[in-house]
Image 1 (cartoon, one colour):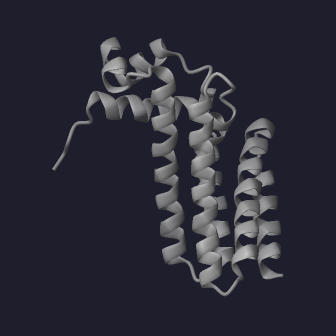
Image 2 (image 1 turned 180 degrees about the vertical axis):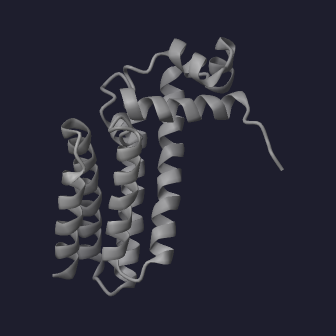
Image 3 (image 1 turned 135 degrees about the vertical axis):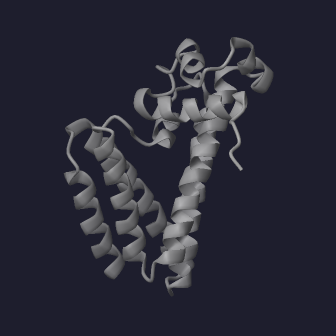
Length: 188
């Protein structure tokens, strides 16, 4: 069945795409409305809190989408190294096909500023969720829980930092370096 996305879904999808490229502050309502092909009244109908609520929900939904990717990698992989290299390859593909314009929407949310505390809190929730998912997988492979939580955090932080550097440098080398060194860490 082919379903047409409603205005709420179109607004969230557009917000995710635009915040990946421009950040939260630089994503204006006029541009969001044009990109999503949505009427102005739809924002406040579906997001009574306005742009901040829309960006918060977009952050959480983008986080869920990437969580599903992490879960799929975990299900298909036999080792933590395969999961890390899978994440690195996915981000290399995203950055390469977008000519380094599409970054991580969760980083954009984290950098949204003090005027958007709910958006920043949503990014913290997502990062914590990703860390927990990786830690759970590491525990299932025999790592103790304290180490798994720390290593999961390092994996997320390293990949996210590499994505930022890739965009800045217009090079995939930071992700390649992150992958190689995270695999070394996991093999210790």
